[in-house]
Image (cartoon, rainbow, N blue to C red; front, side, top):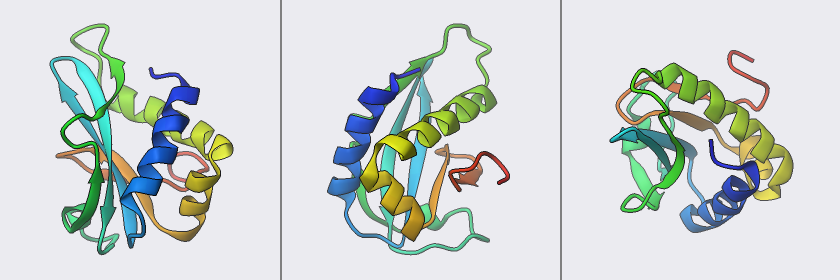
Length: 127
């Protein structure tokens, strides 16, 4: 998994780039056993509609997403990556003022680009 310090640097630039939105989403991708992410700023938010991030305002690094980890084996599950990514977000929240402020003011979600989203509360899954 990417080192937290490197992720925080990327995250600070991403938050600044995407600017003001109604909500934010980290899309996670798996391509050729490499997991990567992008940050989407959305124009709307509807907790009951899983497609709300599709109303994109701005996307940070869609053409060159951040590599967060390589699958060490072919059976590395998406669930494993989600759990590790959430831990990374929790750590980043305590080291990035911009991300912490964002989490306090707007909904932030993460998940597989074609899957279900988790709302990030900063307190762990289901918190």
